[in-house]
Image (cartoon, rainbow, N blue to C red):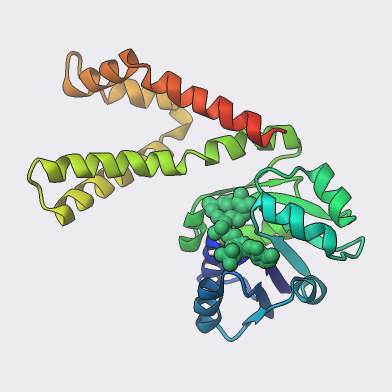
Amino acid sequence: MILGFIGTGKITSSIICGLLNSKLKTKRIYISSRNKNIAKKLERKSRSIKILKDNQEIVNRSSILFLAVTPIVANKILPKLKFKKNKKIISLISTINLKKLKRITKSNYIIRAIPLPPVEINKGPIVICPPNNQAKRIFNHIGTVIEIKNENLSFKFWSTASLMAAYYEILNVSSNWLIKKGIKKNMANNYISELFLSLSIDAANKKNKGFKKLVEESQTPKGLNMEVLKGLKKKKFYLKWINSLDQVNKRVSK
Ligand SMILES: NC(=O)c1ccc[n+]([C@@H]2O[C@H](COP(=O)([O-])OP(=O)(O)OC[C@H]3O[C@@H](n4cnc5c(N)ncnc54)[C@H](OP(=O)(O)O)[C@@H]3O)[C@@H](O)[C@H]2O)c1
């Protein structure tokens, strides 16, 4: 299997590091020279990784091609590239739908995928649409594949995938609060990361119960957790959270 990546940014780097940590055998991985620094760092990690300056060469030489550029760059560069009709393409681009990708590339073999940076440590959900055995086989090595037939439904996952930065900001704000109260940075970061890690593992183990149950169980009547939750609800924190999801959903569903 020869993989090619157009765009060597954050997500390409996470996928390739994840693949290098996995048991998937790849004969060769071609990456583009942009971003130069990331490309050089990746090339140093394995002899199977080669940088190519010309995007068309990456298309021609790969058996599976990943599109990992931003939508603006994709709209600019993809129409200039030539793809065979049966070119296997996995697009990671958030806001270009299958119909448009097929029109631009003229390929009939396009899968959209939503891997997230933790694939670097072989963790996290990876939505693929439409279902495809080869994409599933690759991505199962670096995360948990969720196959979606209906592209409209896959947009909803794109929306929830956009909660990453907001989630990290909760960790950041909480840790900074501890630091401002006089706790050493290392200790604060350690406490907050361990706290949220344990809650996430617990939630994953109990996912069949539903998350509402966990919300209930984590509150003592008139206790501290109840006070924080009530306060945030009163300030419409969760309503704003849902509004943000609706807003981003409109953008990805275009
Ligand atoms: N980050 C995520 O968590 C994530 C998850 C799933 C999907 N995605 C999607 O994946 C795509 C890339 O996201 P990203 O976060 O990896 O963005 P990024 O870090 O900004 O990477 C984009 C890369 O494209 C390169 N590029 C720009 N013009 C190019 C050209 N003409 N030819 C080849 N490469 C070019 C950029 O190089 P320069 O730095 O030299 O400009 C940069 O390395 C986006 O569509 C995003 O929606 C991202």
